[in-house]
Amino acid sequence: MKKNAPALCVEGRPGAGSPGLPAPAVAVVVVVLLIIAGLLAFGLPLEAAVTAVVAGGLVAKELVLSLVCALSPRRA
Image 1 (cartoon, rainbow, N blue to C red):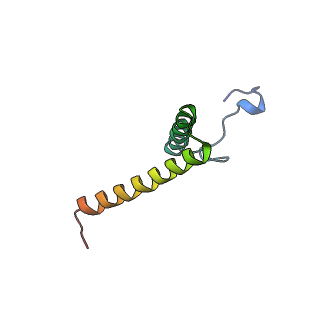
Image 2: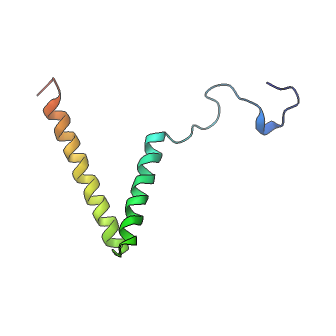
Image 3: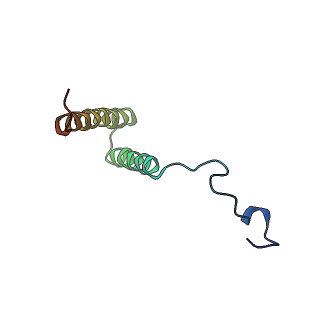
């Protein structure tokens, strides 16, 4: 560390301060916003665009859970 560095430039110990957002969460938010913006650009009303994205997300979640259950080595 530099001796005369401004307070904002001083490195803290690892783990100090508030953690940033995890990269996958930021990526999901950006992708969802881009999808909604694309649907709005094609003239879909805001409510319909949000409904379509939410429904698609729920279907995708169920598909992933079904695939994990079907492909996992331990089956109940």
